[in-house]
Image 1 (cartoon, one colour):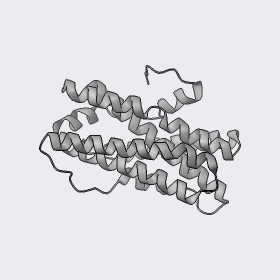
Image 2: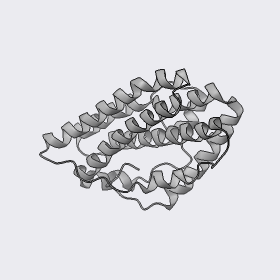
Image 3: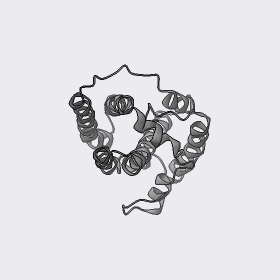
Image 4: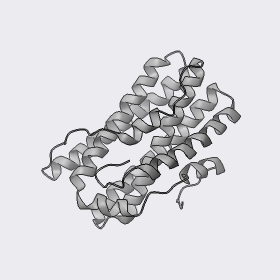
Length: 206
């Protein structure tokens, strides 16, 4: 997948998810911006609350606390920006839908194990969600017919670009790099199967 940023080879592999987004998705998303904006708002909200949960659950790990605290602020700021865009269009925030994509990812998390092993899967799942979100924002920034919305999502893509690598870096702080990378590639392979099995719908980010 093409990108305009300078990244290490590992990060390029992250950008190159095993299965790219179906090109039809952007066209479907452009049909009803209200739905995609509503879902986007909830995605930003969930990203913020997920970081808060990690901080609460691993308060003894200083790097997690210090690195994720500003991400909470940033993600909540993104939620407010999307909400502002809805209001500008005289649209209301719709109801939160069931997130089938995330629910399927949760089933891949290993049960039991040490606290650090559970932390590894939490961090890698969040990294994967951020990677897919960034890829989708890139698609919107290039494929929407509305020039304003292309620029809108370009800003989100640029802002979110480093989030997924942060979660992997945090994992490598507390677990061996080889173990992190091995598990990361398992996650990538599994996520490709999830994407392949989901209906292509333009009313959701994932």
